[in-house]
View 1 (cartoon, rainbow, N blue to C red):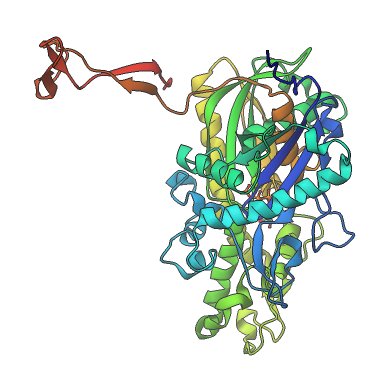
View 2 (cartoon, helix red, strand yellow):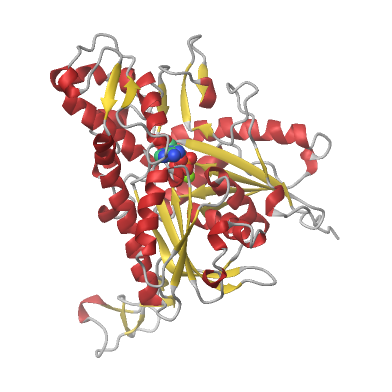
Length: 486
Ligand SMILES: Nc1ncnc2c1ncn2[C@@H]1O[C@H](COP(=O)(O)OP(=O)(O)OP(=O)(O)O)[C@@H](O)[C@H]1O
Ligand SMILES: [Mg+2]
């Protein structure tokens, strides 16, 4: 008799792939060393030289030699395609939480949306091509780390998707990853997880294991069973949220999902779009100088704005920052802050870029907290764990802290260490051992089922005579296996 090899027991690798709108990260761990503090992150990427980078830009382009380049290989000003992840489900998200400026870039009629895709290719084609580059790099890195055993080692790949996406888009991402090579070896396996759930797996474990050392949980009352915690992944494209009630803390953490995940297109890319909009207004008739790659992804202008954006809200932020535009031919217009080499942005300008986006994020969090209190009135919302690149913004943190302190009971805000890489590490934690023991159904599940006609409950317009029993049947029936709670 053939006995299947007990691969799980002989140890396997878990690889978490955080496929992001702007950056992608990969982490891994061996099942026999499941300590969250010992999860390795891939930090060497082509084009980054000897520098360590916890993530790689989600971009494909062309190098000056005409060869295909990607990620860190693409230098300032080189033509590139990116942001295609959002085009996998441009209709996702709730209107109330989507930033209208970012939505414009997802409109197929808009030139900036078209520039995200190569002529004649779909978002799925671009995602597959990019993920294939990631797969190759991951297997090379793992081959270096496990030179003698990789060939026979089982790998469980976990890929992240935004929680707000439709089932179809989540499925398409999985298909793109499969076509790119993930899970293609016979012993390997590929599975999706939502971004906030991955974030929760890492952040809650990290916070939990280092209890007492992390300032944000010094208030241990927030970290007890029957408290609700919101996890917010504020990334480049989307801001994704999920809420859990703590079920048990010891001997291991167990949580229950209390509100289905929700999110919006209001990530940090909205800030870039709003900056360009402000610039177009200022430039007036010169605005056409922004067309094409001069103001596109990776241009000097956008890189310079990125630096200023990351600084906003910190004590290093200078009133009246200068942004190097690198666009030849711009006429000076001192009244509008346009100089030969720089564009001047005041504190108020920056606020006008940040505030509408942060208002969306706060509305999202506020509505999530309201819903959590409505569904579980006896379990107070006591914490928010903020992760993702945008989650590192000091300005966002300050505004969120202000909101959190006004809540009753007050809500603590926690930014785990290395929150930028938290999602990939969280996907690994999820693959090793999840913490979520109950989820809220995202939809009802059932099957169409015809039953004998009953005049009290059935619509006579949907009747027919059964060919077998010659009895009258109704074709308007459903048998529900599982129903969502309201
Ligand atoms: N300190 C900061 N302030 C504001 N924005 C920041 C800061 N640090 C990083 N960002 C922005 O965060 C984004 C990257 O974050 P992250 O890697 O979490 O996003 P992503 O995973 O690519 O996107 P998504 O999760 O939405 O698909 C970039 O748009 C970057 O400009
Ligand atoms: Mg992300």
